[in-house]
Length: 203
Image 1 (cartoon, rainbow, N blue to C red):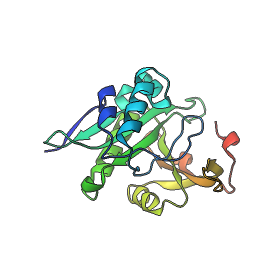
Image 2 (cartoon, one colour):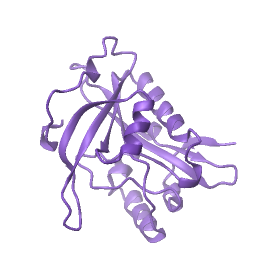
Image 3 (tube, rainbow, N blue to C red):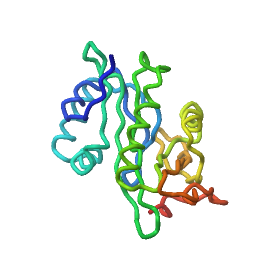
Image 4 (cartoon, rainbow, N blue to C red):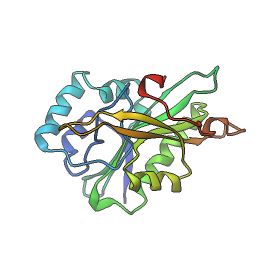
């Protein structure tokens, strides 16, 4: 039976089979994709930075521990995780939950685990009075885009060159995908913008 529990810093030592969101983040917003493998050495390095408070995720865990959830198999191996936070202005009806990272180990995919982790984050955001939940995903990551659409998310806007590329490759655009919560009775938060924006335009 799968156990869903609070994330701990020690879990970073056990990331190898799951993977980490890829691509450079902007303003603490990373990709809500399905992850890529992380080497043991890199995982140890990530843990050291995390424990020292030098990572974005470490700061988020300190401020929003309820948004960090791990799925653990009966044998103790990690199956997947979700990381997030709450942000935005209540006055402007922009207070919302944000998915910083979602990753499921390849051997545990197609079991509905990603959907369950997303559901838990949405429930947390509901309890916090959020108007919506959002996430950023690469335009090219159609597997993730289609999965989020099946979970009720839609493209709110396209962010030009959101992901910084490496190895001389061009930067990549992102979709900002949203799902309205019950507080947004008129679904105003998910009305698509008619034009793309740039990273510096995102609050």
